[in-house]
Image (tube, rainbow, N blue to C red; front, top):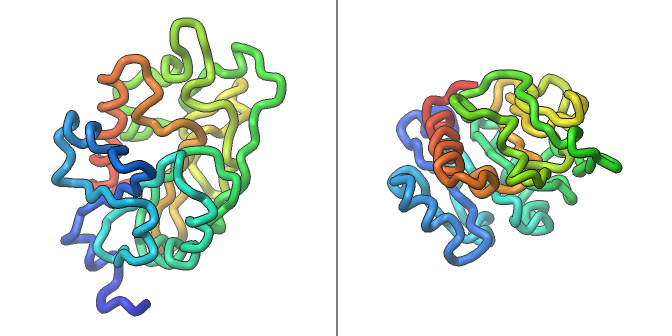
Amino acid sequence: MMYAVSYSEEMSVLPSILFLSTQPDQGRALLEVTDSASRVDRRDQYELQDLDLASYRAVIISMMADQRYLQSCAAQLDTYLQHGGWITVNGHIALPFLPELKPFKAIPNPSLDDFRLQAKNDHPVFAGIKVDELNRRRGVAGFWARGANPPPTGAQVLNTMKQGDVPVDWVYRRPGGGCLFMHSGNDMWVTALDDSINHKLFTQLLDWIGEGVQ
């Protein structure tokens, strides 16, 4: 596929964000309650190969995405990232579809304390949110994540578990290219017991993408 303009040029005037939906109604209520519909184009995941990604500032991928299908779109996603696109990935990587992705590693024989989430580096997506509360609901742990998709060399680790040993959330900016945001667990906007936190995480993710800063 040939592009008339570079991603960086087109994205400066096209801030749309592509949300790849894995179910007919996935994301619909979220966009309505957060008043985000004007910023997000929600499309069925299997439309990806037919979409011109140069029209989008970023792509959001759910933990429920068909990774086998995403592997068939690997060249398209890699080109998009290389030319300045931003991709947010949620979930456990089983079938890597980008060079920076590695298979998920669960924490072996975890204790309750191993699941405690710690902030390693500040990031706009998590501004004003107590991350140590994200992985628990009424004494039950593991809602945010239970392990990690290991980050590539040069990634900025945002949140960790197991006393800092497990990099749950990270951001990687390709030299001269785009930006990859990885959350190694459930979709970020469904994990907290308090929906106001879920909505805040989602809108701050969109804001961060729109501002174009790491």
